[in-house]
Image: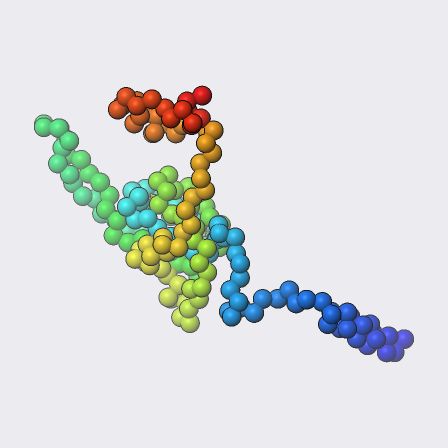
Length: 177
Ligand code: SF4
Ligand code: SF4
């Protein structure tokens, strides 16, 4: 029937008029995101051993790493010289990244972390390639890890260090029980 649709539409409009708005006025009202939201990836360069796992596992191939080998003197006299990887470039192209988090999951040395920061839109797509300095700056916005479960088993590294210096486990920790 003609006009029925209009009446229904007006009824819906009047119903909605009396309800509280659920939309947020971003950017005037910043959204209340969960602290562990996937905003941007931060890098702790000191932890990176240039193992290349993150770059190999990234489904988009949007992690760029360059490095060179550096020779170190032998650890003991008469030993063989050692070598280590030195990072020359670490960059992530956020115009390709799909925020899957695989790179963070596979990093064996906790060098990559999620930051909830999301306000890094650019007018030029090339500026979405974040080089190591910019990735490091994001570390300031990474929330601290959640507190450890007091009843959890003692981590192996802590146990080894404790035994090495002859300290007994803390009676309040899970390691003591
Ligand atoms: S979040 Fe996923 S797509 Fe983005 S850099 Fe890491 S592995 Fe690649
Ligand atoms: S997986 Fe971690 S340690 Fe290995 S290259 Fe990537 S960031 Fe560095």
